[in-house]
Length: 111
Image 1: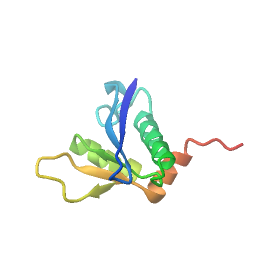
Image 2 (image 1 turned 180 degrees about the horizontal axis):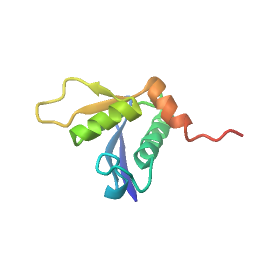
Image 3 (image 1 turned 90 degrees about the vertical axis):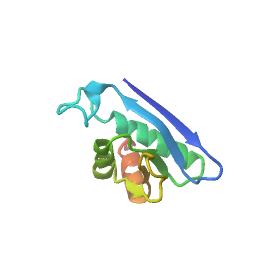
Image 4 (image 1 turned 180 degrees about the vertical axis):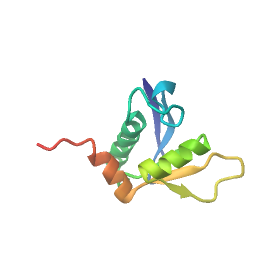
């Protein structure tokens, strides 16, 4: 259903989501009615958890493989474009602060 790979580097104070993929029928940029909703959001929330555990304040970065994904990350995850990438490199986004809190806390249960 989904696959994610995460990287923690000592010289960067964020967790980088190296790879994130969901089945095509659940990808909101590929179909109008995804079979399963929230798969990417759950993978990002896990990256945020790893970032908190590593002492990085919940900050995560990820690369947008397509313009549609870039728009999706901006609109639905509150991701911010990180400027200064090399020409031809995929745009890199940062999810931090209020956006990271909103994603992470949406998975917490009230007790």
